[in-house]
Image (cartoon, rainbow, N blue to C red; front, side, top):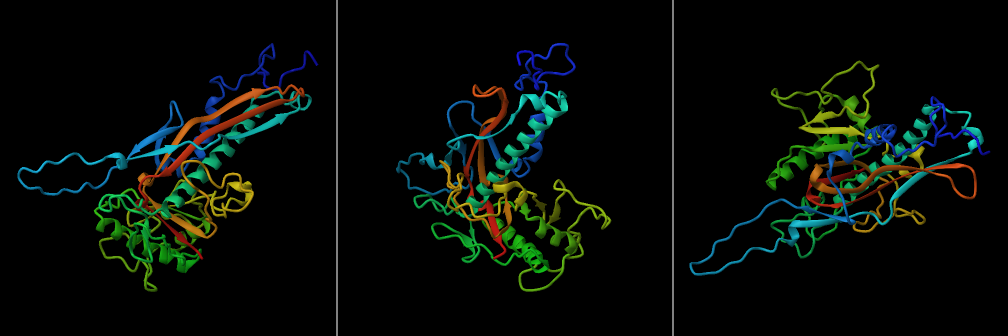
Length: 365
């Protein structure tokens, strides 16, 4: 066993020296796959933590004015509420694979090593992406702090009350079903939300809507606006483009996850990790409050929530803050109990609500 070929050595070299996954040679493969899957995550506010376990995000918004009489003294307002601290989760998320040397030494090619590292990056990025969706949904359920200045801070939009909630529970529409009727209703709700933002003095630019693949297909088939029901998009004027699909394709063509539909300035995306049945616990639309779920709640921000019936999230990037301590760092080890090789990779991230008024959710039940 002393002269056994190392499966992480470079087969093109005369000497099968130990291969170190920390060197730059294969790092781009890991990083590229990791970043490729971070789709919604790239839309939200990001910061990297260099030291410590938290980062402060400044909250920009509305600052009111008032008048005072001659001779009055006044002081600066307390700005503590203008910052929110976001913490890392308690523990990094890890993945790994263990080889048996006698088997893997036969596959002494770089492509095999690359496939394992790519798969680990894929697993970690999928988890990060689902966590981002959970953060957005948690923000959509958020009310303003009870001691917050109501003229400065808002909670998420309460569709039942028709306003931006302060301390009440948040109610979302429950009729955005994954069919033709639900697709039409979603467009109508987007209209309503745009108006609600503008009434608050918030520009409705930069809105993204992420929906389940089934709902996206219903929007895709809708193609043009149809007036039906009490809360739909209705017919557009002669000055507007009626096409929701701004790049009409042949019906034999496929729209991938990188191409959104467009309505009222909003980009509407579908997401392959929405249900995620093929990825086990990494699907977004499931009950994260169930017993035995090791990631139900984390420090700093509670994501112990039930997203089973969520069919769409409508948001701007400033709705949440996302922090990361490290990317997908990869390490190769030889456990003392065996001659096998162990590859491990991990990421350490965290997130929390910044502006709950900039995100809302829709449900199918």
